[in-house]
Length: 475
Image 1 (cartoon, rainbow, N blue to C red):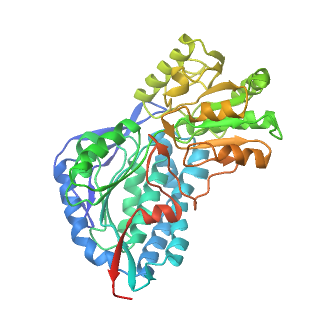
Image 2: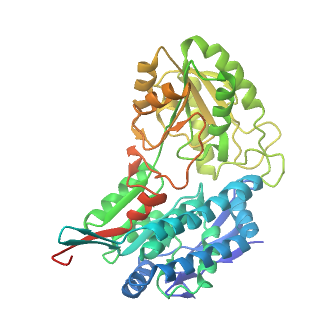
Image 3: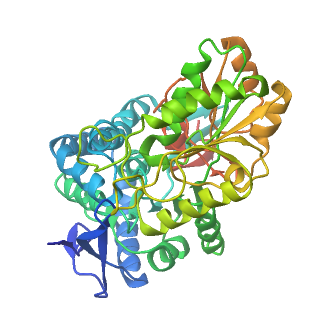
């Protein structure tokens, strides 16, 4: 039995879409549909954009206290429906319930919480000589979000945009849309004026392209693949709108010879790579170890991979659920085959489902060692539980290998603190984690090179939704 989520949220109302095609939402653990959504058209986007434009003058002039009140109500709604949101995320993208409950939903809630102190302390006006510098809402925002951390990626755009006084047209991933539908229901009950937030489901070529090119949308924020990000930028170019993008990654995890606990660093790197079934853009997928310690790293990594239990997302012992879709399942297995063909040493996992699982898009946790940085598995973003281990001779070579990629999202360094920090400064990425430091939700998130442009999270993410005006002679 499937549940229908076939209406769109436009101008404060749940409405029937302009067209009638629907799409099955597939549970990747069962390969069966559990819900349906309507697929939007350019007409639906136009209705949402016009509603957002009409709502912008009043919302952009709302007070900080009004915006905080709405955000706090959204937070209360997420907390009240957290179990429902976790179940939806697990069903639509395969996250184990433990991960959905402990990380997927809390990360979404965290972005709404984190924007409140930013809003409290932000100076919207500043005097500079005789000029008054004013920061004001950037306008109507179009958001195109992914399936891998669905609520997180929606919240880290919606929260700062609302706080800045912007209005919104959201297209969540059609692969994982149910959490967004629940969030829209929460927003509908929080007293936000009609038109400030709008939800249209659909795919990239139809709804995503229409958002990117719509003349009434001033800002587009996209999270997804580098390939799709390129198309978003092209579609947005004619209207000269602001585009921010958080795209792919192939992050290096450099374990230095002076790491306080080498084995712990290797084992932790394996599990961090496998988290969310490897479906994180900032995952540490390239582990770099000294050549002299490759054999040691192989033994530790093999043992760590053996502990990565794969199975039913509803089971308490499951650490890795399935990957999100048949498309991803096929792509990941092809890349594993490419690693074997190109001569990488397979030390754990391999192509095909894990033993005992004959249904569901399950991937064996896979580790390759003695990889060179010209191999396909070291260069392409696999987006699955596949780790490559590369050797290096010295710091200079480790840094060169880490930077020898078209991506620049994140990096990881483990070593004596001063040494690790010195190496981190030479890595060309938007973020570097030193000695296991976790993500900081108040710090900027984003990358260099083909990992995107602009920043999300924290103060820098908030400022992406502001324009700067100079009132000369006003001070």
